[in-house]
Length: 257
Image (cartoon, rainbow, N blue to C red; front, side):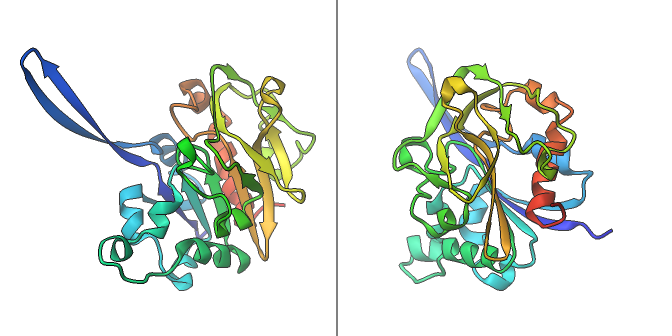
């Protein structure tokens, strides 16, 4: 069976630190990736996943509908809108370049699948910096973004609540007792969307897992993380971890339901 092609963009960052030892100091730079556990889980699956880290996506994320359309689904995970809007040719050389948020809207309208997973630079993000509100990507997502910092930190953990749509293909075999999560992005489900899971009532039963359609395509919003820090080791070790994300992808590409 031919594997479905998926583009996963985002989930990388660089951190700097200054080490001070008495009179002396020195800096270090560390590169991080946040999708290692997810990529490992999907390695032996029905999907051929191309991982495009954030710093590569600014330059290499597809700039034509034809290039996007080689993928059955696109996942945006912890990657802000500016990374897709500000290609180096525009940012550095002041040249016109395609609006890749509009391309994504057209891609979904033509039948592609789009998934957004939560994080500090997903939906509206930390300090509002992800900036997907009132963009073409928000047009196709099954949720609307806040106009402000949308992160909700839950250090004590919350148990996801599976909705009455427990027969949905994405939830098949997962039961209702999921491991706890440590945070999420606050969003609002659109009226025609299907909410499959929410956060706990302590946090307003806000959307956690939502599906929708746009034109001929399908979209999914998962408002928590795919790995640390919002998604702790117990969730990764859960036997439903692989199935949950695999079934999200299967539904998004039209193989289920």
